[in-house]
Amino acid sequence: MRTIIIDDERLAREELKKLLKDYHEIEIIDEAKNPEEAIEKIKALKPDLIFLDIQMPGMTGFDMLKKLDEIPQVVFVTAFDDFALKAFEVNALDYLLKPVDPARLDETLKKLLNNSEADFQSTAKAPKIDRSSRPLTISDSIFIKDGEKCFYVSLDKVRLFESDGNYVKVYFEKSSR
Image (cartoon, rainbow, N blue to C red; front, side):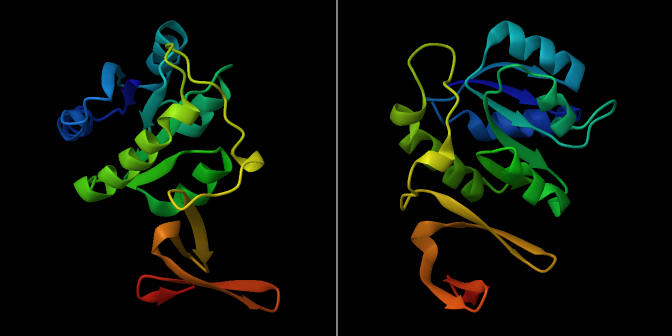
């Protein structure tokens, strides 16, 4: 998958490149240090996937996405957990917190690569996927908001869904929300 890393911090870009080097399916075709540069590179190179920081000088990652006609798959990589809900509202594939945990990145990439045959064409452009029209599978993850806390939980970690009035309790790992 042709990939661009977008982050205003050089060290963050370098660390992510280092973490991605063992994933031969991920081809880092370029990087951008600001949203304006990223927009130009995305339009020219048409990547399948972008790793996108949220807080950058000039405009946010969300603002940048609004300026694109065609949006590749997006994995947000940020130091702030405040934007997780908004990230999934724009159909982000995943939301990783800095510093990126290699095990968490591995989960993201396994999900991405397991779905790659269905979600990506062999050409340079990824098709737009309407995730709302297909049923969830065990390899999908769900976003759970419990008050001010947010969780992104893989369905294979969920033990039970329980109806509780107008709410649903979700039991996963050793937690319930």
